[in-house]
Structures are given as structure tokens and as C-alpha cells.
Image (cartoon, rainbow, N blue to C red; front, top):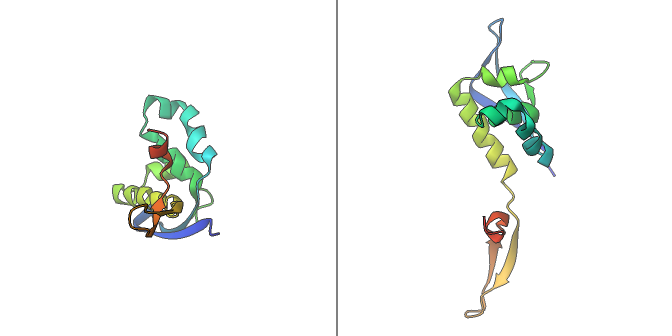
Length: 122
């Protein structure tokens, strides 16, 4: 199973020396990646900050930067932040589990996606 995915930012992060960092890697998120940032006071006072912390946790590489910190994510261009949010969704939601069902009327077998939120009434 692939757990890390390469990406290229549309614009790129510009560091303090003017170097542009566009190529990076993002790993699949864990439950802890999504739960632990909720305890952060910055997230509690501004829920939008969750995206910043979450991305800094799952981006394992960006150009030649030694670490991808919250401050790096904060300094991204809006287009790059939107790209990373979409990329995060695509890699973490790409393999929706499904199951086979047989229609009682026509007898055909179909693949039906398993939606955990819907099944819990959320």
C-alpha cells in the first residue's frame, strides 16, 4: 500500500533566501493527525488553523527544507494552500471502501460505497 505521495505546488514556497520550493511529499493522515491538533489553543480560537497544523504534520518534504513547520504552511500562497487541501482530500479519501450488493428485483450485483458517516446518521 502506498502511504506517501509526491506533489508539485503551482507557485511554490519562497524561503528567506528567495529559493522556491515546489516539489514535496505528503503521507497519509492518521487518526492522531486529525485529532491531536484539536487540542491546540490556536485551533480552539480559530478553527481555520486546523488546516495549517494538519498539513504541517503530513507534509514530509518540501524542496530542500529541513522541516515543514506551521510557519512554512502559513507563508504559502493561497493557490498552493488550496492545492494542498485538495491533494490531502484526494489521497486520504481515494480508496472509499465498498461492498457488493445484489438487487432483489433484477438480480444484478452492484458495488456500493460504504459511507460511515451516512450509516451513523451524521
